[in-house]
Every structure is written in structure tokens, then in C-alpha cells.
Length: 433
Image (tube, rainbow, N blue to C red; front, side, top):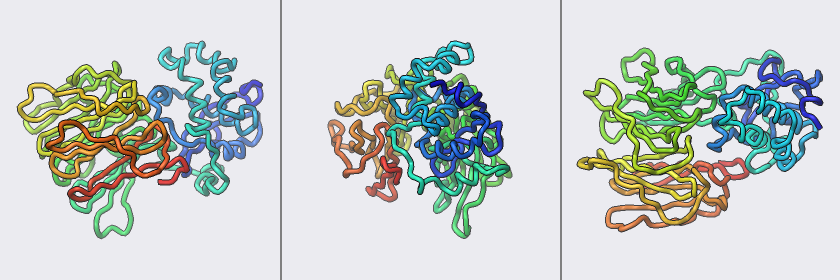
């Protein structure tokens, strides 16, 4: 049955209160004109099905295309109406549905998106696990957002990334890319009764929900990095005495997929290194330190090849030493390293033979000088870790951490809260942290 023929033309955000919502009331799109009826009830139902914003690197490029969001809105409303009932039904529709194939062939969809367009719309609506959110999880904020004339501010896309950093003892700053308000920050420090913010970070713009990478290069100084709407890498900075954020400044010539994560590291006071996977699938780095008139780079690190938009995670295990990690298309985690005296990066070395999801994000932590621990989600939904320290001739692991089940390819975040103390965090398949 025709989605368009049954539900009418779909246009994102043109009806007050018409919105498709992710978990916790985060707006990720709007729909209007769905057959002339009351769109809100169908979208309340559809909101429970939007399990998360896509982290699949194949789908990142679609998220910047408003026409794709219109298709997501139509498929979600069609699910609410009982027209498309299962992920399998949706997969067939994505390949053969007249409306989607017409859009793909109309010239409105770049050739780079043609294969992913319908498939990714189905992934967005049905979620990676195909789970349906219960009524109890359709929150009051969702209901309020769907009421007429309700303004919703500073909400990221469903599942959008929030970056947190401590710039000095007991000070916290968080960053997020909101749906409509650009890049925002909020802060907390001892004596505050509640979080303060959200403030605009120099009117920066990126894809809604895209990750914002933050780092403190010395006490109370903050630098943030994003992939802009043009695919260029931008940075902004703040330090004590500034009344507003400075930036955004483009980093020369580097480009990545819209919504792609960046990794920013300070390996010693006031030195910055940034890492990304470029449009060609190579891993690149750029650097800045006092005395540089501008950023230096980008330089390609070895010949490793992975999906554009893949996360590269890095850590400084001691002063001026850098270790970075990325998962290749075959699911193998690789690492490369640099330290003073090296004329080039060393690596890439594979870490074991265990295959994870292609391009799965790796979380790296240094729990004390020169000790490394990394974490990644397995294809079986388990959380796995591997470790290295001086004296090891190779990485040890992989070991499974407990019996938690997560979505394969989802991020596991780790932190060392003291010497040799590790805490890790992940979202289970039930949505709990």
C-alpha cells in the first residue's frame, strides 16, 4: 500500500506540534499533512518506536538531507497507521516502494545516499533492535512537545551525543548540538545549586545531535571541535577572562562525513592533537601548540582503511605520548602510537583476532602512567576489554566484562577516576544505563 497515497505529502516541521520524537522527548523531525487528520496521535505512537538516532556510519550522510527526514516521518506515520508493520516489510518497501524509488531517482538525493536512503529511514523508525517502547516510556515531555504552540529548546536529536569534560578540579562543562539552536554548553562547579546554561558556543552549527569533542589543554581552558555543515572541521575556545567563546575557526583542508566524531587530545600543557577518519577512509591528524601561527596538518597516519565517519579514539598515557584506536571494515581493532623522537607514527597493529562490528567505536583509557585499557561492544552484544602495559610483548585480552547485553557497535565509555581505578558505562538493550 502506498505511504504517500494513504498519508499525503510529508513536510518536516510545518505543522505546530507535529513531531517525531526519540527517547526522553528529544525531537528528531516533524511531519505534517498526513492525510488531513490529527497528526499528533499517530506521531505520539510513532515516537515510541524511534529507538535511537542512527550511529551507523553508512547512515550519517542521510541525516543532513531534509528530504530523508521527510521520508522517516512518512515511514513512522505509516507504521502508526499499520501500513508498514515489521522491519522486513520496511526493508521491502525501501527497495521497491514507488515513492522512495521515485525520490531516489528524482535528483533530490545525492548518488552517495541512494543505496542507504530507504534502508536508513527504516532503521531510524524501527530501531536497531526492533523493540517497541511501552506506554510508560512515552514521557510527559513527549506529550508536551506534541501540544500546540509549545516551544522546545536545546533538545538534541534522539540519542544525540553529549560531551562532558572537567577543566579543573570539580568543574564540569558539557556540550551538545541541539536540534535548532546550534552548539550549546552548560556548566557546574562547587557552590552551584543547579547546572547553569545553556549558552551558545560562538554561534557554531553542526548536524543536530552530532558529537562535539571537548578537551582542556591546561587549567580552565577549553577547546571544542565539530564537523561543520560543510564537512569542514571547526574549533572554538574559551579561557578565564573571556566574556564569550572565541571561534569558530576552520582547520585547514580537513574534511569528514557530516555527524562524524572527532577525537581531541591534550598530550601536555597547551598542546592539542585532533584525529578523524577522512572522506577516503584514511585516519588523519592535525596539531597545534604555542608558537604555531595556525594549525599544522592534516597528515595521514599509515595506510589503515576504514569507513568514512568511523570513530578514532585516542589517549595520552604519559606526557607527549599518543595512542589511537580504530576498528576497520573487517571488525578488527587496530592501534597506532607516537612519542617524542619518532619521525613518523608507528603502527597500525591489530589487537587480537576478535572481530567486532565494522567501524565499532573503541573507548581508550589510561588508568596510570603508560597503562592502557580499551573497551568495545561485541557482535554478540557483550562488552569486551583488552589491556597493555610496559613489559607486555603484546596486548592482553579480549575479556568479556560481566553479562550486560548492549547493541552491537554501540559505544562503551570509560574513565579512570583515580590511579588504576576504572569505571565504564554503556546503554543496555533495555535502554538502561
